[in-house]
Length: 355
Image 1 (cartoon, rainbow, N blue to C red):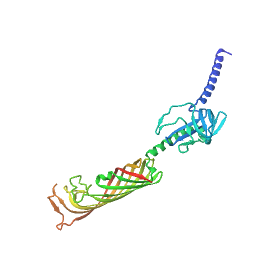
Image 2: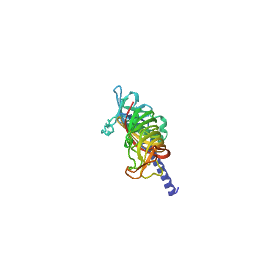
Image 3: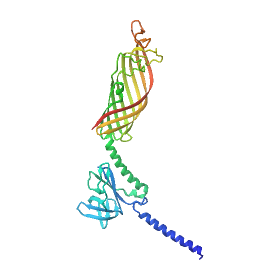
Image 4: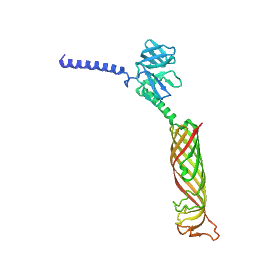
């Protein structure tokens, strides 16, 4: 056999041996991503963190009878922990500690203990994974991730989720800007569905002049409104809702050109009765601070407006001295106007929740 052939054969044997040793090392390295070691997960529902034990790691286990077993976990099968020559059922375990003392560290609930688990049903929840999760890395690490995320969601939910309450009463702060007092009642029906009803009364300024502002009688209408909104809760603070609203408004003796298409330029003295039929879609966020609820929203839509006018006369200047009656007997001219207008909802409600 030539030297070249011998060298090649020797090199092949070395590489094959190294590959076998490397594979053996890869499979035995603790914590390696390709190693799916059997485990039991423990969720702490008081401080919202998670621990776990794995086969192959060293630990200290104290049973409910007071016995202590210290050593390496040789195997975990379901809810049974094999350590040294003992097989311990999880139901018989009082506490699982670390093999060596570790310093305490701090989390959302303060300092965490050095043990991994202690039998406290109100605090610790053992989770025994099904055998199917060990089939692939994806199922294995997805299970761990979901267990961890569920604790984060639980923590966030308890801190911010308003829907630990089933009833809410809220004051619409945005409507106060145009002298409207509006209260809403919301009822939670299911984890992803609630229904809100809102009613309001507007305190308008009568026999006033709207001409010098924006020629729209924003502060002159008296009014009543009713709103209904079924809410879809797509997360614990966010919601999406279609909104239907009916509003009835009126004023007397107000100077304005609205809603004339060709205004005289100086306003008309008139009475109005008005019906608004509105629909919109809102996206919002409702957060809880103890019992206090903060609900903010934004929406867009459209409304159909019917305005019944009684117009008495018009002005020929900015002051009120040059007024002309349309009829000698000072009777009004009746007029009805139909309008479509866009709707933009932007507001904040403040209230409280209760069960």
